[in-house]
Length: 404
Image (cartoon, rainbow, N blue to C red; front, top):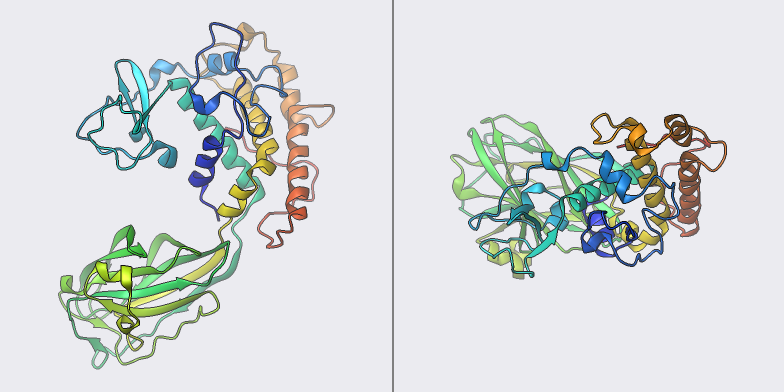
């Protein structure tokens, strides 16, 4: 597991790979995230196939005028585009394009450079292509690798005797992960057990900051598991709190008079709690822990690896793969894209030679350079001493490489 947006954001912030400026005066100008010195001393359009240049890429993209970006609206709340990569955080104003670089961003004029950064439509499209290549590299190298999977922590309580009186408090679980550089805690399911049918709003806080919220519907006097869009809890970030507000219940939770056994004690300290308000999270008192009830909440957990920090610490080692994957993806676009502005013959591209670059491992071809870069990266990762088996092994010489 890894936070792809976080990794991609660091890639652009660090300017790990950039485009060398073209001497062609007609070449479109790119924004500063994509130009200037490259930290890795590698470039997207240098040391690659001669076709991979900005002029060709722009010519083979769909008509840029077909892309619609909303006009700036003062009353809209924008997020940080460099974290979300969402077009909702891109605006137009006076025929120019801007990305929001702060979240939340509301009511800040487009000229305020602390909140907005000017860009170009071509830059946005190129960033999307680069992000796609980065994603392909990781999907080829990394597979989810669970340490333990689908661990159930629950008790089917007696509906007559095991009810929890409603005290109008915030109740749930305090999850305090074991200190680790790369463990990821995943809540797959929550089982609900309540007297009455309820729509329960759950909140997930990390320390005293809300991370997410979601609703689950329970059926009265029926113990049932609810699937979730995976809730991920990272280690080394302090305590997490998963809870609901008792005052919103119609009836009572079922699950009293029992010790809640923590089957994940090797990886996290998970304890039921009750507090009066969210303010209590900033100065949590052990007296708020309630060991003898589960407030009608039962958990299904998995433990996986969170490789985000590891990858970010070793981004330079991934650079060649990023460059070669982008080279392959753009060459594929030049060959396959049916919506290009230019036909092959208009750009003097030999289709037979190009398909050999994409398919043949004979000679110094694009696909062979890409395959070699993956092999070198795997060897480097092994030398780094990372022995968690999170990186897939591929014994074949010919990798299956994804395209855009």
